[in-house]
Length: 171
Image (cartoon, rainbow, N blue to C red; front, side, top):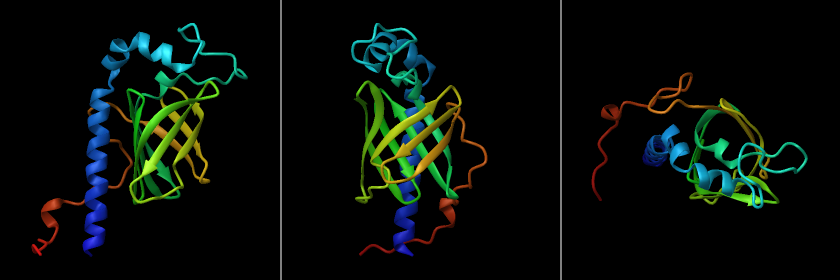
């Protein structure tokens, strides 16, 4: 029971942190970091919308900014990206890392607190203003919807009321 409470508390804390990142990574952040975002999207790119010519499917790292939520295999997945930093909560895993440029394409490079390896290196299959698809080296594939800044995502299971949790005695 204590383990599930800790896992739940970690997940709630990580989700709260991801929403805090969303507030920091709102549309204003895109305006503030305009030159930095386009310059860091692809080395050698001239800025602007076309971020390179690597097969026509090149992804602009600035398009990844925000919080993305969804269900994979019936389990919640939340990814928040702000200023090329990434926080991920998936099932019982909490991971953090960076957006890295790998051969001109951004990838998500993470380290999970539980030592998990299912979501440590993610390739961006596609991203648009409302949907992000990430294929992870560990085999998972997440299709996520963009969450609106300042609003909880719809269609997700509700969090437990913390007032209903039993009090844990101090050791």
